[in-house]
Length: 620
Image (cartoon, rainbow, N blue to C red; front, side, top):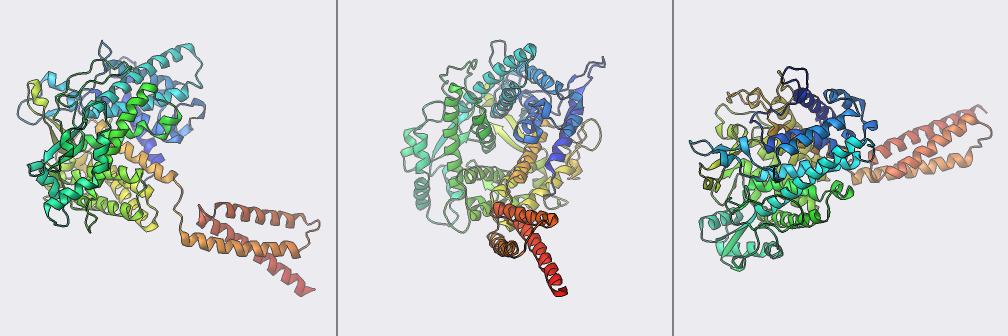
């Protein structure tokens, strides 16, 4: 890989620290600068913090919770935050400031979209509309709260001061409260939407699934049969929205499941022993949006990650909420993976680019979102190389169509709009608060492509196919690197799309935390590929075993035929050869190429001994 994750993360942290720790008032007191391109809101501020906290809690060499073990290069780039001891204290203060700002006086966490909301019409959003909760905020809050709680859990083992321990206790309480409230919000934002097979939605879904051009009635029957386990799982849901109805059993109806943009209209409140504040009435249309479904799925996956389990981050009630979310996570990935790969024919619906939704909207970005859901499924059930490769080919095609791995054309408006101003999603139901229909714009095509490409590359076992995917990841990173700010206070942060697409005339001065954190997620994903074991080639393993067999046999012959006596140099040579053979035998299954290199050196050393002995015997 041309991506150098450690160097890139260090550069992002350096840029983040220099931008964020500034003397905004000119009075000599440096504080945390929350300013971003879209202004402050509960999502943007969380994204800014996650640019720091995600690597610190998901990439071992970047941990900040053991001050004595913090590497010198990390201390250098984070120097504006203080030294090794001061950095955790600074983080506690900054994160506490975030939680205090986005908690109402009655201790209800605030999950509003604020300045991220735009309007689908001519009128600007009202103040009341900007206060609406949105799934993006729930998801980012889950990720931030888990990162903070894990950070505090480890830091507590080395901190002794009474003052900082009290600050940690307060922060832990606020983070836990926000985590519980975000989980409740996600439970109330999940939905199952049913519709007749002959409705507009039904015909659109059948058209997507019917890649073999068979009779529609057969498609409906086979699709319902393929989804019978998902349908049964919906019946097991007992809390939150999206619970099963009799309509699911009707053979003339189909359904979709996933997350709406906010709490769905009519969503029941959640009975919980956790303090989560006021549970507001839902107004979002009870239908899934692919974008918000992917955002929710990515966050929920962190709830049952290995780190969350090992650190025992969730209390008993949070574990109950987590299990309810995991059930929804499982059935959602199963539903979309089944639909995307339906039919077993020569072409999957996923491969019929661009993806078309049931409301007849189509976009390459939607194909990338569905690919994300299929990736979740392949990870969960350890998909075959053939399946992973097909998804890899889709990602490659999307990279071409999105002008990531190919240069843009002179008149390439559809591809350009995906990057700026982004793919718009109208938040139906938001108009019920007395204003226009709100709009949400997604601009993360390139970072999302990097995230999914590196994840598939880490799963695939075929060396050639992995190499092709890593090449796509490198091309995507080259594209992203060109979109960094190269001057000004935002230098080395994102996003300046006009540097890659000349037809985009808009220039920006402030960083987009929405975009930057998604690039960070992509780089963190690349570290997982590099930390994984190298691919094992059966051919190389067999060859290595043959070399080892010959090397060990010849070495045994040398030990048998050559008297060592008091020759200290010879004993050292034989000890080294023996150690190399032992090491080669230990790693031959996981690292056959390295074992070959060790065995080859042993064979050369043994041959040199044999030649030397022959010369001596010839002289005698």
